[in-house]
Image (cartoon, rainbow, N blue to C red; front, side, top):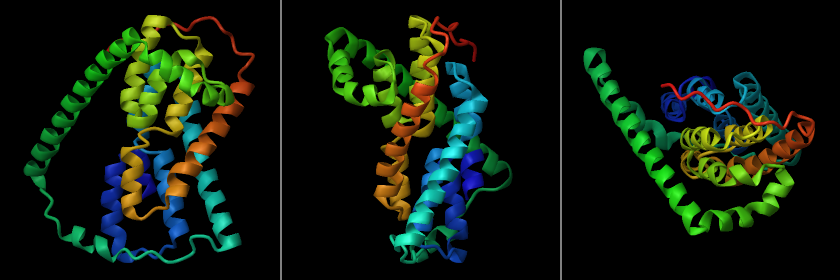
Length: 261
């Protein structure tokens, strides 16, 4: 399930979950740990390509996501084994109905996939354009400055620059695709230093789409303290540590990210 999630997408992993549900025997802790791993590391080929385009190392951020996923799952499992927390078995019988769904095959399957992909790309493009317009409006009306001031306590702890706070916040809430696109645009305009880009994109790599993706995992039966609260806390700790480890980085601006397709 995690392999499907890491290489394909969150929704592909949900399909794998449904297909294997009749054979799964898991505790709530194991399910929550697996869901947390899926949240930390999913859709890596696409999402990390966006991170690279935005200006951070693909290898470093991918290793960060995989390492955090394994470490966090191991921590949750250890706590559960030690304390008995979330040790009750999970009932997956409610997923059984999903196995009877009719899936198009052959040419019909490719046509359906193509249509859905085009729809997804069009919607994503529209959302990104809308967010760019919204960012300009927020900046002109002074709301961006208020958001940044409100985030300053967290920024001080994490070491993230206030310059990327607004676009990072959007990515954290809505997803790396949107946040990464906005950072590419902002980096082109403001020429952020490499350290600023790295910390922002590392944060987005570890915790993004807190609304949609977390809701999917909760629907599968994961515990909110594991997949949301603990994951965000670990992200803040990691970013704070990276901020201190990278203090000696060269501070001159990095070249603007590529603009090609």
